[in-house]
Length: 234
Image 1 (cartoon, rainbow, N blue to C red):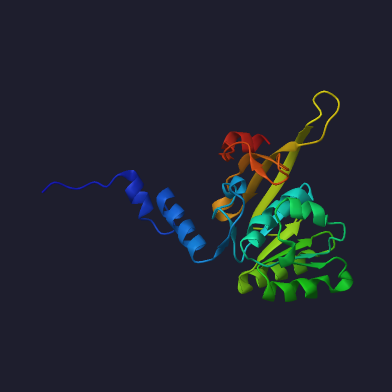
Image 2: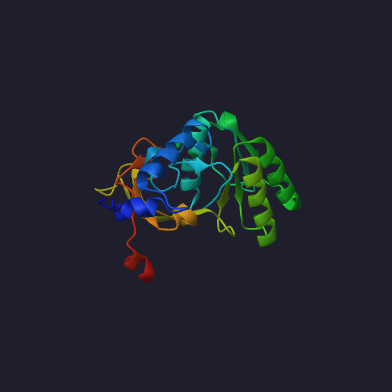
């Protein structure tokens, strides 16, 4: 009898906890169909493990409110409800330009000492809660992340957040539109970098226009995984 030797990939895929690329893609598609993932703009989808905002996750955003607004845009435009807490200077006109449906956003600009209680209550009732992390203590942050997991909401932190599942950061370049010394600012190219835990452990970058020519986010280049050697020296 001739022994059948499985290919190395097949043997690896059979191990507990190991998934092939096709299996991961299928799981992500099922998650989107069943509503476990809130959509994001296509230009940002490649940066997130499930190609969207997975319910129950915490995502920390660094480097400006533009990226935060871009994350809120697609979800609210497709029917999700959101809340923004502790960000009194958030520009509503800019949010609308990025595509955020303001009719589906609750604002709590100055919650004061009640911020943890306000965020916890909102996580019980809306799909996404964005909060400025500046005054949130680490122990409170972990409790709020746990509540988001339990309630199936997405917690978006503007700033560092202990134990965030994914961290997104921006590196801005020059504006375009003033090539001859006059005119109107049209767009700004941004490199967005994503890294985190689990499926998001390997850093990924994407080049986007934030804002794009029409005011909203636009793709500039495909998402690219950062080589391990480059990551080690970053």
